[in-house]
Image (cartoon, rainbow, N blue to C red; front, side):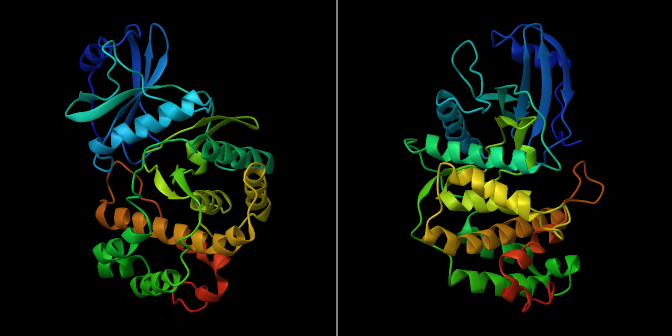
Length: 321
């Protein structure tokens, strides 16, 4: 279970007393997610999510995330803004952690989305990008292109314990990508982590876009590339589903048709997504004990996806050839 910080019933009851949400009925730790501690909280009035922000989410970034969620909610998007307490404060302290009480959204995350669901999710991402046109705040991407080489250095030769030659292969792929990474495409606030488990659905309807804790200002199309890489493959990264991939792009193009420049850049952006998640998963793999609360995710599952986006590069890499 991915609950790092325990909150007792007595402490949680006292915490809820700051709000006009009724009395505590039950609370249950949520196993999904690896970044924060989350609880499903039922009160005499409603259901909520309590999130305690752990090491990866800096407290100083929370005002940006909360402002973005408030902005999107005001535009009618299905996002979960934090609920302010009786004094108007949304960001709290609980058990030595920054914490927020968050609106509960109905729906389920999908492990095997259909083409219709992928189409709806692509439209939802386009709606998000349309809604942030007038969002005034900026946040640098803490996991953006400029962070990947330093992260490669931090992982070091331990990468070769995951797959022999992986360190040198990623180094080579990064050097290759640096020559083509686009610098002149549209930028806006992006989600930057819109995996299937961060989209809630009922049937073919998107009922929630959640977990905005990597949101930042970056290339708009990079958000679609991340989503494409996350949705279009099976969990192992070995099998590519072109129907899902095409549906995502079709949904997105319902509001943001891709230009010729976009199409040229798209595969490079997707290669970047493959490298980004390979490195962040590798860092977790190297630094998370095998018996930890969180199940480590296979870094190679994203590395393998690179074969689809740049087959010529893949033939030059020992770990993919």
